[in-house]
Image 1 (tube, rainbow, N blue to C red):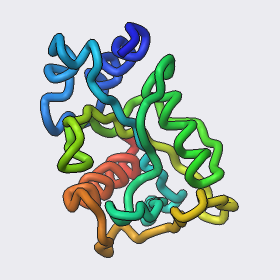
Image 2 (cartoon, one colour):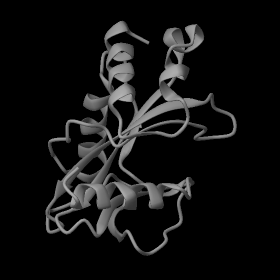
Image 3 (cartoon, rainbow, N blue to C red):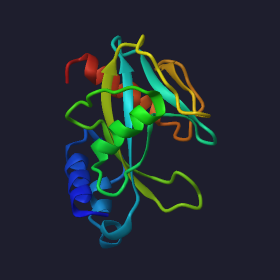
Image 4 (tube, rainbow, N blue to C red):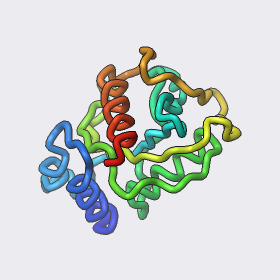
Length: 166
């Protein structure tokens, strides 16, 4: 992992509203700083903070737009790129990340640090889904089938914070 990428990831992990898995400590491990995978995603809320935009992954179900941080990118840059690639949405991300996590995206893959960023857009925004991965709005108060079941509650809590002006 390049120094610029690792530095940005550590800074955003420190600033994240929630760190669910000791992400900063994980990023500081020597083996991670050399080759550890890093992911970024965007929690896209509508103006009313009642819906979140998700994409249908072929085996992980409904997940936020996101993916792997490419060489030379910061997690924030990767999140914006993935948001555009998977939904056609170009949006500014809020300054403070919503969450930092350490997760297993697949049983045969190494554990991955991830950063979740936030943006709020008009739900009428035109979507341009990636082929084979439809994007759709989902109500935060209704369950959806996804790889990480705790995400819905985490997103809902984030939306409540946003609504309270935090």
